[in-house]
Structure formats: structure tokens, C-alpha cells
Image (cartoon, rainbow, N blue to C red; front, side, top):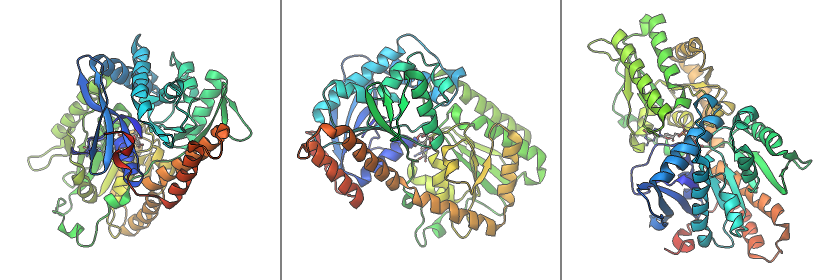
Length: 485
Ligand code: GDG
């Protein structure tokens, strides 16, 4: 597994969907996790270090301060993140960002290549690392390499505005398999490759980019619902957080401009204005842990939210009732389940989101006999899989207002019926199904690409073993054997 940021298995878990998804996969498969340790050094040449904790091996290295500014905050989060979310207005195309982006990918590839065994299958995650496969191939790495994009792909017109769009498209062509969250992302990627580098869709369904051929597929990311389900007697032990008629509406989102937080706050304020009978009977608790605070657009959204929460609380609050609890901190993961369970409404309103794991976690935490209601943006990737929630258009404040009302007024029978269907979908498409289907397709894609490997080669044997292990859903851990700790 290769991703920009590696979770510290020793520390309380950080907020963020990519880390959660990879962590769950490594619980099920053997392997090690390579990437940035979250530390920043003033300068120097970072070296990787390997740590094994409880059977999990991570190989991580710091970023230098210039890397952090130009590769991470710059190209990754001020160019690719906004453009992929179709927010060209927030993109900052600055000289120097792209060369740093490629240089960090080159360094990661240089440090990863010597750790690889002939039978390793490499799974690269997310937009920070698009050039990884190309850089590994330049170093002679022949292993199958897959890429999963956790965020959406913008329409081709937005993607073509990236000055280096041809380089990005060519780099994507170096993978054997690219996985995306939804069918609409698949269409956008194909469209982009066709328009940027004259990619050709082949009768086999594969796509040719220059001399390379790759597979593109839809693999909606899931959670491990068992992390959130309540065992017998556990729920009864929960402290009562809802007293009498006071219902909690919960929001948990990284403080990001894609998550539609100002729209959520405005809609909640409007709801209190239009339905005064709900004042003192509901509270919106919004957890919004900080991320990427040095990017200007993130500082702007923080200030906007503080002002909105302040004005709603100032306008409607009473001595004994605060309408919005706004908490700008990361909470321990162990507390999430109880918070979801004690909330009558889950309110998720991204303007655009690859998937949205919070929505799935909310569903998995509910009491099936008296479940809460999920109100979710139709622009979250999860909307494709969860049509039985209350879907809203986050750009239309009146629509969110009605979503909140419908959720609060929904009779128990309907809540139960909807929840049953939603939970079935969350369970069917869990984190295990996600990684299994990706690995299985990657093994097939690797086999097609590796027509040149003889049947007896390490690679051919490794791919056969991978297929078999995916079928068996192997849980054994290879731990440190690969990385020479
Ligand atoms: C990206 C894509 C895609 C949140 N606050 C806290 C906390 N979290 C956890 C949640 C959840 C995860 O972080 C957030 O996942 P999301 O999917 O909602 O969003 P992103 O971070 O933007 O993730 C997204 C995802 O990748 C996976 O592919 O779904 O579309 O943008 O697990 O519970 N965890 C803790 N404290 C918090 O305060 N411990």
C-alpha cells in the first residue's frame, strides 16, 4: 500500500477517509504501508524508516519544508484537489509546484523500489501520487501496480485546465488498473484521457494511452460495519445524551470547502426560522477537525463557519439552549460510534465527495429497532449506493431545510424500513468487498499486461497466488519480512 500519509498505528487515529480505508484493508491482507509520516524537516534528504507495531509494518519518511509547501499544500491540495472537485475557481497554478510534485514521487519510488519482492502487488492511493507508477517503471519495477482515486474526477473541461494535464494523463497510463468511486467518475476519466492525450477506448473495454493499455473500473469504498455495530447490552450502557424531546443532528466532516458546511449551517438556521416549534427541541452538533490549515481557502472556510455558528447561536440561543455545538477538534475514533448512535439525524451535505464514509458509519451505528435518519447530498459518491436515505441538493438551502424536516418527522416504521435497506447496502459493499474486488481485478490486469512473463516466472506465480488469496480472503500477516526491518 502506498499513500501520501501513513497512519501512526501507535497514536489515536487521525481523521480522514483514505487512512481509514487502507487501515481496514491491511487488517485483512498481508503487506506493508509506505508513505509520509506526517513530519516536516527544515531541509535535508529524508530517508525511510520501517516500524512494525502489532503485526502492521509501515515504512515512512518525512517531507522537507519545501516539499510540504509545494508538493503537498501546493500541487496536491491547491491544484489537484480543487480541480478534481470541479472547483477551478479555487485552484492556484503556481510555478514550481509541479516539479516538486514529481520530485517527491521520484524520491518515494526510489525508496520503495528496493523494498519490493518479485511477488508484490502495489496499490497506490490518491491524487498526491499519480506519477508513482511511471517513476517505478523507470526504475525497472515490473510488478502489477494499481491506483485508486478516493476523490472524484472533474469533468474533462475542468481537468484540461491543469497546465500539466498531458503529463498527468500519461502518468495515469502507467498503471495496470485505475479504480474510481462511481460510474460517473469512470466516465469523466475516460473522457479526460480521450481529450487530453487522445486515449482510445478499445473493444475490450480497456483504454489505450500512448503505447500502454489499462483497465478502469468502479470500486466504491466501504467501511467495516462491525466497528460500528453494537453488541448485546452495549447500547443500553450509553449515557443518555437526548433528554426528553431534544434531538441531536450530527455532522462529522473534515473542515473542507468541499463538504458543504456553510450550506449546512445556513439551512439549519433557516429551519429554525421557518419551524420555530423545533427551537429548544433540536441541536446541531458539528465536529469539524482541522486539515490543511495553511491553504488560504481552508482559512476562509474556517472564518465563515465561525461567523455563521456565532450568528445562529446569537439569534436563536437561550440561556439553557445552544442551537449549534461547533467543535473544531479531532475526536478519538472510539467515541464516534456512540455519537452517531445518539443522534436522531445524520446530516451530510458535501457539494462534491468521492464517497463519504461518515454516511456509512452513521448507518452502521444505528439501532435497527429505532434508527436515526441519514440526510445526504446527492453529490456524495455514496448517494449511488444509498438511495433510501433522504437525498438533498446541497446548493438548494430550501431542499436541505425540507430534508431536515422530513427526517425529524419520519415515523418509526418508515425509519426502520429505510434503515434496513441502507444497512444491507453498507454491509454488502464493505471495506473487505472493496479491497477484494480491487485486488482481484488488479491481478487480472497484471496478468494481461504480463503476457511477457513466462508461466513459471515469480510474477506469474505471484499473480496466481494473489487470485487464490483474494478468494480465500487470507488474513495472515507477512509483517516485516518484506522490508528488512
Ligand atoms: C476521502 C474522500 C472518501 C472525521 N472526523 C473525525 C474522524 N473522521 C473520520 C470519519 C471517516 C473519515 O474520517 C472521513 O472520511 P470521508 O469519507 O467522510 O471523507 P474524506 O476524509 O474527505 O475522505 C472521500 C474517502 O476518502 C475514502 O475513500 O469517501 O470522498 O474525500 O472515517 O469517521 N475520525 C476521528 N476523529 C474525527 O474528529 N477519529
